Image 1 (cartoon, rainbow, N blue to C red):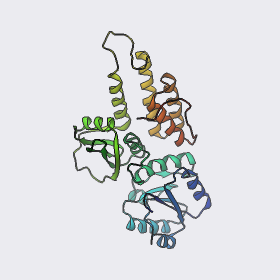
Image 2: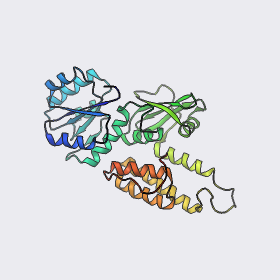
Image 3: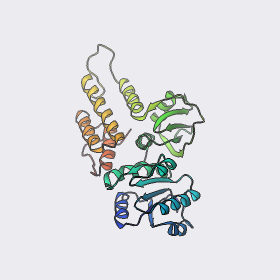
Image 4: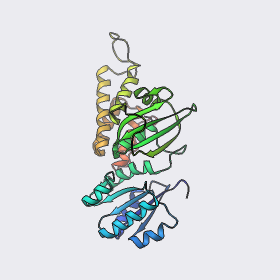
Length: 307
């Protein structure tokens, strides 16, 4: 089924499947199926290649182990999400797998799924995510990934993250911070997301995503600032102190999102929008934080989404 993300839920309880289905109801390109153990996964894998395996750890440990091994044979890059507390042995085998401890909350599960599905879904012209979105989701899930970006002008570039931290970027404008700045500023035609097992292109950067995005945003804002002594900032009609306040609130909102404190992030982005009601980055991040918090927030302020 081209363009569809295959999700398999290993569980023996109807409640888990109901929660997962509820969290995924807004993802039309996701197909969710369930299995109860090794025998069923063998049948399912005859014509399926799961992109994401959600494991309910209330299933007996020997069944969990056999299912994980079977799925990994078919798709070595399969993403795994544990519901419950994994054993030390499972943590050792799947160190990057996120864990949603019991009792499972829809808010926490929705946040983890939003991050995971961004990296299991086919990225391309129809992708709902921009490079900025992907960077923030990679940081949220502490993923090690490579983003290969095809730009509208026919050139391309890449950004490498290790554990959610930006380590390398390159494009026709150079390597490092200059390349990252250029890729974030130019429209992309398509994006490809690949798992990154080791860096093979250098490691000239050591930037957290919120710091990189904030620094670049402040740098863009500074281009509209008047020369020293000219008085008030003219970019939005606000004063320098208002600009500092907005940047502080916006940065705190990003950091709250990365901690998984989406309700706090919503509060901070709303406060930032009181200073700049049509600021597209704040509007965009408010929508996303609201969705992850389970509030279904659609701000009534105007403005287009942006990064």
